[in-house]
Length: 99
Image (cartoon, rainbow, N blue to C red; front, side, top):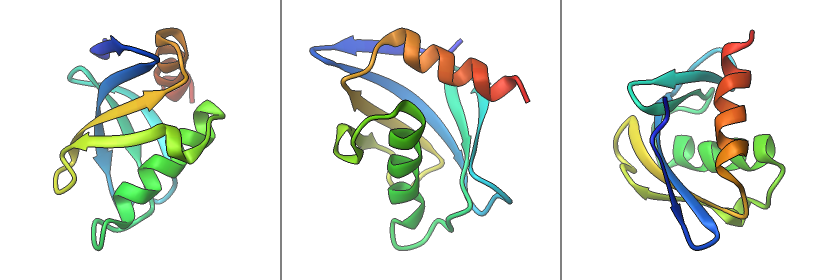
């Protein structure tokens, strides 16, 4: 199960990114993190930017509500998302496993 931390009007959780995938997709949970595939390469922060845009689109929130707190140079990242509920994040992970 994804480890979520609730803060004032924000949820913080881990994300495991697979760059250079064939498509952008949520792949469910991986070792306590949300597993996300991105087509963007891991160079010049392209994968980081793509992750923020992708999560914002999936959660129907503004891009500015998604922020990478840690792991900018790693596949394992800590992400803060403002204006969402724990249930929305859990549903996103669940939908990712319902291919």
